[in-house]
Image (cartoon, rainbow, N blue to C red; front, side, top):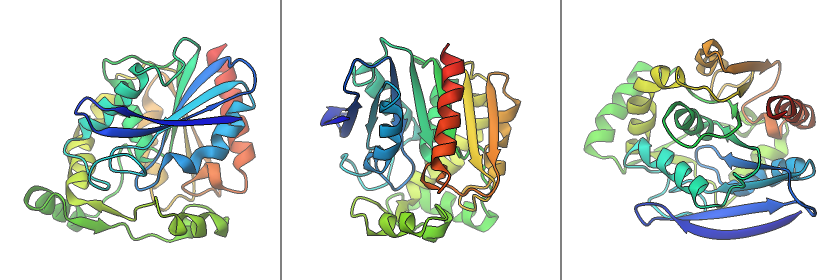
Length: 273
C-alpha cells in the first residue's frame, strides 16, 4: 500500500491536508473517509489498509481546524463549511469518482456525510455512516450554555471530557489517542453551536432526502454518542442500520474491528454490484 500526502484549497482559500492510499495494482473502487471531531485522518490508516487490500483507492483529508489542516482549532464559522469542504475535496479529483465510489464517515464525519447525502450535491454510489450524531442527547443546561457562549464568544474553547475506554475496549486505543499531538480534546463554542444546535435543527428534515444506498453502524455500548442518536436514519428508505452489541464509539478500533469491517465490505459488495 502506497501513501501520498498533499494539500488542496477550500473555496475560502483555507488549506486542507490530504492523504491517498493506493493498492499495488489498479484500483476497482474509490473511498473517501471523513473522520470525527478532534481527531485526524492519520488515525484511519488501518481502515484504509483493509479496503486497499480489497482493491479500493482510499482518500481522506483533515477537516478544517483539525490535524494538519488550516483554520482555528476545532472551530467552524458555519456548519456548511464542513459540507462545502467535503464537496470541494470530491470535485478536486482526490477521490476516484470515475470508479464506483463510497463515503465512509465516522461520528462528526458521519453527520457531515449525512448532510452531504441529503443535499443537492454530487453523490457517491454508496455510503457508510459510523455512529453519526443525527439526534444526540444533550443536557438542557449544556445546550443553553452552547447557545449563549456560541453567540457571544464563539472561539472560546470548551473541553470534551471523556475517557479513553469510551472509544474502545482496547486500552491501547485510548492511550494512543490522548498521546497523539494532532488530536484536540477541546472544541469551540461556535463549532458546538453550529453543529449541535443550528445543523441539528434541520437534520431530521435533511436525512429524509437521502437516496444513496447507505449503511449505518453503531456500537450498542457507545456512551460518547448514544445509539439513539443515529436511530432516526433507520426510517429512511435507502438506509439500513445495524447496532453492534458490546461495542463502543470507535467500532473500527474495537477488538472486533475485523468482523465489523468485513461486514461493511460485504455490504458494499452487494450495494455496488
